[in-house]
Length: 521
Image (cartoon, rainbow, N blue to C red; front, side):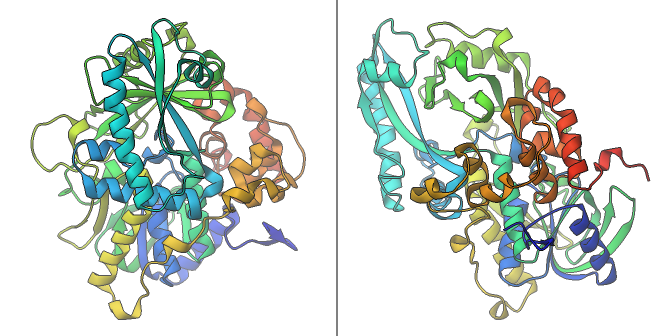
């Protein structure tokens, strides 16, 4: 599937394709849509535009999923928290987009995630009723958008023994049982971004990483290849910014109130190897929770904070000591053996691009609604929203561009509701794929092709040489950092990344490529 007679598959990204497409852009700089930003929203816009037949170029000054899109909670949310705050439209949109991800677009990159909230005496009855009501409302949304019981089960009360079986690390002192709900989980948020970008490439989009937009108007931009310094002036019928919390760089009129969400990374063994998510109320709050998310490489993430982020906006945000202590203190209220700072192997933090609609409320109360804004010089900015609803955000952004800049009747409507991402395979048939389950969860139908690559040194946590080489030859990794931090996520734990440097370098050598960070110009 990847290579036929050494001819690259249309969705494959690598350094050679990047060079060819930069040359083609320099030769003919007239395009239909320029997308600035290579996170989930930008990749989604590129797919939506390219699948409508528009000549589309996406530029990203760093790497795909370099910003907020790799720092999410790794969940495909169904909108429960938006119901609680009365945001019915956003809740419905979230549930509908989760349905598409789980059932059609990316069954291989998502899975149902059980969520266990343990109930302790005293107060267990009242809390169980309150949480059960919320879960019931969320399940109503699930049924309204058509997600079948076989994909996401109905919520239920569970007994004490079942709660301990699903969450073996919790304390049994005064435990009376629990509530179990269900939501969607992303195997890896960065992999979703890469899959969307590759699907866009398969429809003809040029996906150009390490290319920055030095300047832009509504119909033009100056682009710079950050690897060579070459600059290209392009003419575009529409320029769409999908730069998230950095949106003010292209349109200073965009006002955001970024919120920082922080997670801890711990060894899953410290939580009993649980495959369910443990949900823990934040003391003193009836609507805020800390939760655990079982993840790849035998790790578990613990999150989530929601605090205002101070300016200036960093490329890579970091957790604060107060946030780490808050997350540990909350989850420890239900653990038999409390976690200590020494158990925290790493942290990561992402910045949510929340629209500033006025007011002085807490960022946790701000709407997650997305918007398409137009600058004075015509640049369209898609901002706000959340990872789960990326497809709808992209559709709205391209629709706005078509209305403003094209003969709308000549451009087809969005098709992305029915375009599976690369590697997609029906959920109930994933076991048919002839490859280890670990690879199927990361590559879906492409797992046998990734597995068939050459041998070499493995990386940390069982990451195979084939996975590393696939990242270079097919997924557009240009540097060792790309490979470790966004294609495999080994970079989440510094010790894992350090132990994998030689294996990553060897993968570039097998692919006949040189990491861009080792090239001098």
